[in-house]
Each structure stands twice: as structure tokens, then as C-alpha cells.
Length: 228
Ligand SMILES: C[S@@+](CC[C@H](N)C(=O)[O-])C[C@H]1O[C@@H](n2cnc3c(N)ncnc32)[C@H](O)[C@@H]1O
Image 1 (cartoon, rainbow, N blue to C red):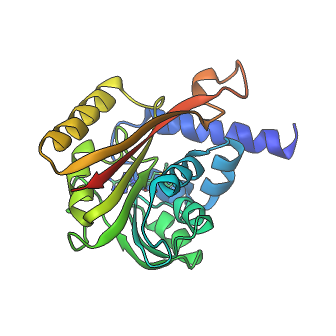
Image 2 (tube, rainbow, N blue to C red):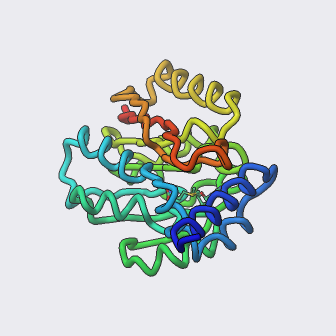
């Protein structure tokens, strides 16, 4: 077995264990943190790049001056991608100390805060951010979808809210209920929808096919809203 196959098998095993978890994932991510970047790389986790590209294609403000709130920032993969698109100022939030320690090492964030969303309020000033982004965390046993209301509150009027979500590790119920809330927030005139794009290649290896195929394209969706 090559070193790469070994890492892929290891990464699949970690994802499989994550899927089987039915409670808080903080310890899980604390333990995964050191190997997270390497594992998601062999799993072709394209989500941070896809979300950053989608957001960048719609963002019309001054990106060098823009303040970005990276929610469930993990090790910093989303900020790294947004930096490629010219964004420079980041604040990160995550529930896992292990992930935050690695995000700190990137030197991308002017501030990093530990917070368990859903249990604690989003620890930021309302109306401060030009961009609020969350990728890979709106799913069961992670960030409850009701936190989306707080993400909208954190954005400035005219600010962008970008939600990147895989469509495979999830219960359908979570996605259906989240999408109902997104619509309801439009009806409440809290935000307007900029785009909803389904992407085929969110992650191209997946545990569902473990033992059958190594590379199976799994979809995800990037939802972009603008605060009114
Ligand atoms: C799959 S990682 C995604 C990290 C990063 N956004 C990326 O795309 O690489 C999920 C992240 O969500 C964080 N997380 C899960 N549940 C959370 C919660 N309730 N509050 C805050 N962070 C949470 C985990 O600690 C982890 O860093």
C-alpha cells in the first residue's frame, strides 16, 4: 500500500467515525485537528475553494478593506482560499480549540474565538462584517441551522452571507428545514438571495462508497445572500 492510499484509507475511516457520531463533535475535531488538512486533501475536499470562488464572483465591495467572519473556521482553509481572491481581514470562530490552534498558525486571522454555536451566542458585534461565511459545518451534530439568523445579524446591511454545505453526510430533514428557514428570512426581508449553486465536486471521495470505489463525486451547495 502506498503512503497516499494509506492516508486515504485513514481519512475515510475518520469520516466514517464522524458520520456515526450522534452528539457534540468538539472532541472529535480536537483529535482530528493535526491531520485534518492532510486528510481532506486526499479526500479532494473542494468546498473551501468552491465557496470562495462563488462568493468572490458576486462580491462588489472593496475586498482589501472587507472584514470577513469565518464561522466554524477549522484550520483556516476558507480564509486561505479567500485570500487568493484578495480578501485580507479575517475573524475566525470555532468550537474546537485544536482546530483554532492550527488556524492561529496560519497568521491569517486578526482574532480567533472559541464558541460552541447553538449552545452559546455568536460572540461578535452585530452589523460589523462585510462577509460572513460558513463552510462544512451546517450539518447534523455540528452547527444547528437556526444559527443562520445570527450569521445574518453579524453582517452589515449590504453584506454577504455565504453558506457552503455538503449534500451527502446529512439527514435530508436538516437540509429541508434549513432551506425553509432561508426562504422565511427572505420573506421577513432580512436578506435577499444572490445565488444558490449546486456543485458536483464538493468532495470526490466518500465513505458511502467505501470498499467499492475510491473516487466518487459528491455534491454540495453554495448559498449566497445579501443582508437588507
Ligand atoms: C468540516 S470542519 C470545516 C472547517 C472549515 N470551515 C473547512 O471548510 O475546512 C467543521 C468545523 O466545524 C466546527 N464545529 C462543529 N460544530 C460546531 C459548533 N456547534 N460550533 C462551532 N464550531 C463547530 C468543528 O470544530 C470544525 O472545525
